[in-house]
Length: 168
Image (tube, rainbow, N blue to C red; front, side, top):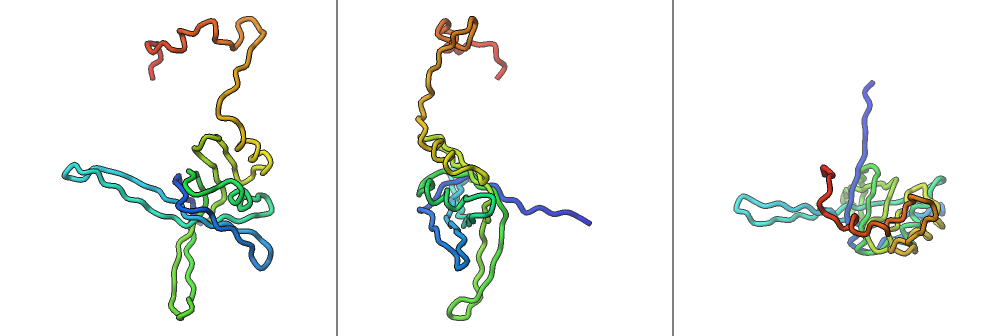
């Protein structure tokens, strides 16, 4: 028997604030549109750009409360990494026309960019996510009391020196 894989990985920006609702069974679901863009130069040398819009669906599950995290921390313009599977649906609208949609069923999400440096995974605790989201972006300067420790104040020029022997 052959195996198959349905996996989608996207990094993009939210086009609008997520919509969060509850189903009749009480489960919570968040939906949002994620924009991915690519740019290239055409044959004449003119810069071209194309943006694709992806409809993403995030569910709360027994193991993660990802829809609640989306509701609390994600807003229009945010950069997100999402991973999940692609799903195609079809249904009849009010005029009895057959409609189709393509959705990304998100299983994992990481918040990128922004000043907070926050990151949340599908299995992340929401309190830990909140703490990470509110953390100051400036690193704290720690002093080490050990000889030969991690304190680089003794060599300030070494950090600014651009002529090093590193091959990269």
